[in-house]
Image (cartoon, rainbow, N blue to C red; front, side, top):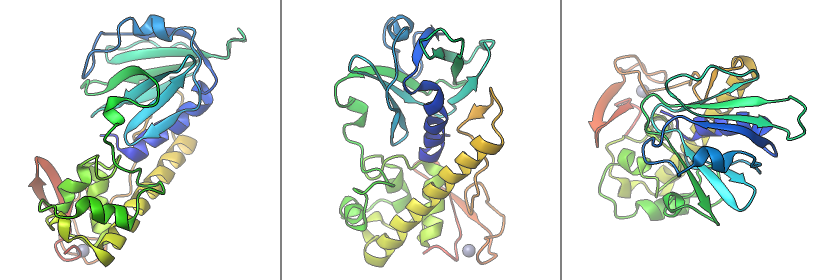
Amino acid sequence: MPELPEVETVRRALVPVMEDRLVETAHIGRPDLRWPLPPRLAERLAGRRFGALRRRGKFLLLPLDGDETMLMHLGMSGSVRIHHSRPDIGKHDHMVLAMGSGDGDGDVAWIVFNDPRRFGWIDLYRGETHPMLADMGPEPLGNSFSVDSLMAALAGRSGPIKTALLNQQIVAGVGNIYACEALFGAGLSPRRKAGTVRGRRAERLVTAIRTVLRRAIEDGGTSLRDHVQPGGEIGYFVQRLSVYGRAGESCHACGRAIRVITQSGRSSFYCPACQR
Ligand SMILES: [Zn+2]
């Protein structure tokens, strides 16, 4: 499931083929994904030019000329491919954009949005922001995320810290994988009451969140450089994980077996010795 680093990797891959480039043709495969798509989306995209690509949490914000922005969410299973020759369109390829320079020089890249489970989403909006982004918490790699802001957001919360980290109003873009990894990095149990994460613990958590996300973005960049062939799926790369998906295997730090519990319907992986 794509989280902040995966979405950021997609954004970086799309910059050279979308920014200041023109939609020569657009194909939309179906009228809805998780929610209905904007009416006549293909016609509305054709002939438009994209500006500087941005990301907010797990959303891609792709501004178009004419004060409109395309919002894109990869959902549970969404991925993006870039082709440099016309691709065959598969069953789960819901959007295909042929991006060109607008000069008719034949330099075209096809961007394919594929999503088998269809929890992804595409929308168009005008103006500053979209309702889906309105209540979103601070970007964890930005200046507004700090020990003080995190402690304020967690104050008085009696639910577990793991569940709080998945709340996009507390911190944007962190999902199940990086919440588990950050708690391991900070030495905090996923069961700890969120409101007790203060002082040194909050400092360790802020540092760990930033560290795991930055490292994963680097890994995504490495995968783009070294491994992604034209037409390869972007946004899924081999993560270097300490606890996530490692139940029963030994902790790299202490050798104890990694455990898994379910919290709010999600698996939490942790080391019972290293995390308190
Ligand atoms: Zn351990």
